[in-house]
Image 1 (cartoon, rainbow, N blue to C red):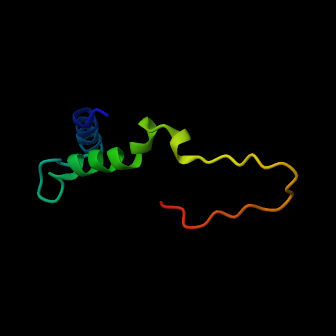
Image 2 (cartoon, helix red, strand yellow):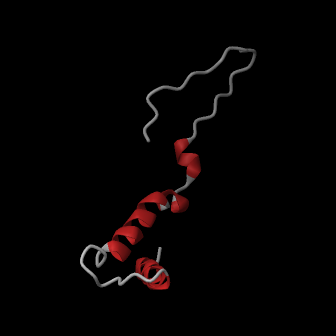
Image 3 (cartoon, rainbow, N blue to C red):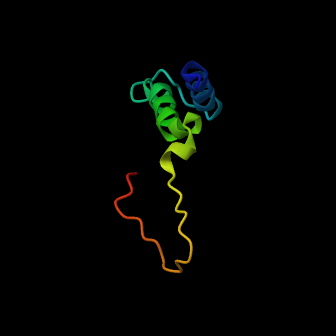
Length: 71
């Protein structure tokens, strides 16, 4: 993920809406937003198959319940 590019884009958005991205209270906003996107989209590069478990049981018509799923 290109954190610097995200920070620049957020800075441009702030300028486009008429805000001063260098004013107190906003100067850290581009970096905060970039970190947020890194966290939100961290799973895009992960292999989903490592989190899946397939059940190959024949003849069972019962519901399977999965508990304690980490989020």
